[in-house]
Length: 399
Image (cartoon, rainbow, N blue to C red):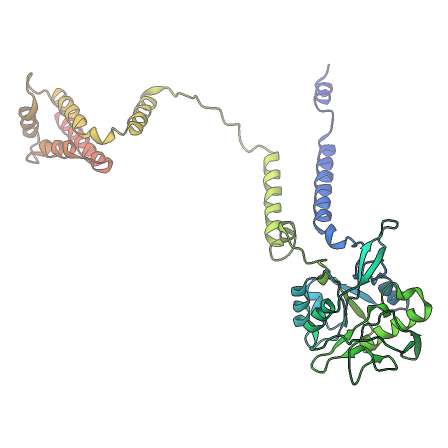
């Protein structure tokens, strides 16, 4: 069998195939991560008074109706969108976040905004997905709580005696259980003075008290659909576009760690880490220099023996007590090397060694005393060096 055949048997896939396989896997993983991160923001809620809902109290029909008639309809998913000058439609649901509404009011100061009050309590339909069943009307106190956050007003009491309401020349039936407020100069009102669409004096804010004029249930009738479009045109005629708020319904405002990794300002950090990982991967594909030989667990030689002994003494905490012992050992070694008379010990040997030093009085004794009295590693190391230097210098003079 040839060498090429052996190599092919050992590598069933070429390097190019492996590279593209790894690249496709990484690309798929990145796509899955991004889709998993942003999927909740684009998931359409089932039912409720939201611009994406197809239920009776939703406004998906109005959004589509505006697009079909040639008017742009955008969605506000973050604070940047809310700060736009485009007229905004805020559809309030019974379960909306009051703090989110306060934030919208603050961001929309000085900007054209239509607030649509809630009206009905509903439940999701079990027969058809996305539809809902109307249970009953919201309590007046609940609606007044929402209305009071926008303007100093309350819903009016009593039923309207009018059968129709005129909206820009389009006469449509008055909604069931009409929600209205008292206003001397309303934009839309019944013949008996029940205001449905009003404008605030201090801000370019509009309040539609009854959502049954523009929600999905209203668009089932041709005349009501035309009237609903007329209501929107009252607030966006100057700009020619309208935007629907999603932040009040918790869409587009949920931040987590995954979003922080792929959005500014942390996007730069994420890209830097990915580039560093890619460079490390490329660096690991090739070898630089010969492979490093694995060393022995226990090395040979005197140095290894000394290092092992020092490590054992250090772990045992006995290094501080070695100064006097080392000094005694150096004294005996120096006497043997310099030819001291046999039998000299202790101070007698120190005096003899001092006499070998012609340039310094008590040279060895002083160094011996310093090593003998050292009680820390730094002092011990310095005294040992001085003793070693003294002995080496005397041996050099003798030779």
